[in-house]
Image (cartoon, rainbow, N blue to C red; front, side, top):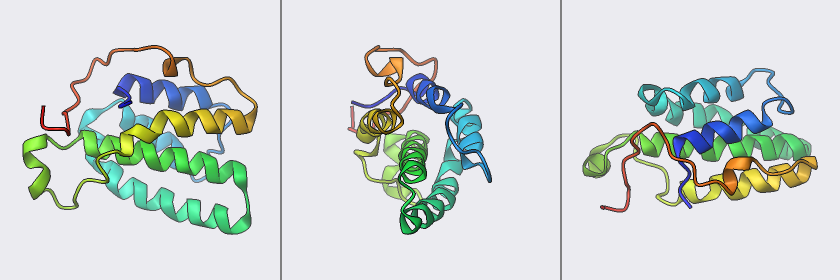
Length: 139
């Protein structure tokens, strides 16, 4: 299921109190999520998050690894949402995998399970976005 931008913000807000915000890509991602003009910046933000994920994995820090994986998939999704379908073949850097958005809500659910929290309410709610998200399936 492709989450709406409102659902993505709800996911970020759901975990805001329990996420590590030192050197915070999390706060920046939250700021970008509510401003479609900033979604293109999520490509570079993903790179910074990925570096942190790899470090957390090497340290064996499961909680931070899950947090950063959630941040990564949200950054990928927002970057892809910034690209109009007709521009897809011409954009550099290229979009992330087309199905990236399909993993936002499952990763959020897994992170909630790890933390012993209920999943974000938006996972079961349809929620509509106040932002127009380009379709990436050609429709």
